[in-house]
Length: 453
Ligand SMILES: Cc1cc2nc3c(=O)[nH]c(=O)nc-3n(C[C@H](O)[C@H](O)[C@H](O)COP(=O)(O)OP(=O)(O)OC[C@H]3O[C@@H](n4cnc5c(N)ncnc54)[C@H](O)[C@@H]3O)c2cc1C
Image (cartoon, rainbow, N blue to C red):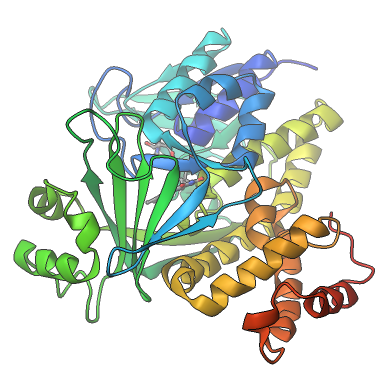
């Protein structure tokens, strides 16, 4: 394989991981990041403070030998803890015994990936450099330095845009003929709040769990941090009643939390400052195609090509899976970048579309259904059948989170399973016989000739 000069725009999660992959293969990689070096500053890293990392993400990290290292700085979350309005708790395991999703610090993970990229010896990261233009035919990217205002032209063999949902590289591609693009802001936004550790530095709620306060059209969630705190996120409509627009003062927000999230509010001593001081951020879904320029020399990946809502905890995971897929194609096609990038976009686009749909669907499940008895019963039936017949049934959540089954296949299977569960749940008296032979036989019949991937 001949070594290439490669420019990556963006040293976020995906750009830094891609740099490790390419640097390890001996390519000369220059990464340009518009922010200062987060390892030397304490500036806010931007979006959510922590993220849920699951099997797709782990696979990509393990392939470059950093899985163990990152695992040490993460907290496994084995189950959902559902908080009702009265503060009563309900528990839902995420997967089989021992299966968990992991809470990791966005900043900590990003900093570690940057360091590992530099340690390959082939990656240089340039900070305070904002991409302002790309020549798609010549693979030249232009960066403006924040401090000096000077422009740098980076000539390479290939350019990757890993510069997030508002990608500058994509913006240039958008102006080319037959480029499809859609951007959708959902009606909900989010605000981060926090639950600090207790006086002994310990977590004030169950540590190895993701906490959810589902309330129909909105919800609060909390993920644990290693320092004993929880980061909470309120997903809430911008308009309507209740909404961010009706909670337009701390006093109103406090009254609302006292009604809806009383047990959480008691653990939030900084609620007033955080409600007022923390931004209310929006959530956007971005779909586009193609992901590779006509010349075959410029490509986008991660949020730059498929930004999704965070409700399946798959945005970063899917961006990391982009790196896995790309790496497999490099192994298969070697130097033939034109061919492999084209295969990458064709192969990956249906999966990106599927996880975008799945993520919206999971919002409804998290905010609405996790408190619904019929939904909980359905999950119990599915779990029982899965444990007995894993070759016939893998619950959708498990397919997405704990396997490497393509997202597009998981979505299709999920729809098929929905239709089956509709029939099962319609059985008269299902509540009393959910674990009966009758239910099991019906499910066996309905899943005949079905073997999961
Ligand atoms: C509230 C919230 C919670 C989330 N929770 C999860 C979760 O639990 N699990 C999960 O898997 N995903 C989660 N996500 C999604 C996840 O954050 C993203 O999918 C992930 O960060 C995408 O990585 P990326 O590297 O593609 O983009 P980004 O992380 O956005 O990184 C892009 C980088 O490019 C830089 N950049 C931007 N423009 C330029 C430019 N013009 N020139 C140079 N550099 C530039 C940026 O500064 C940044 O460093 C969540 C998202 C949100 C909003």
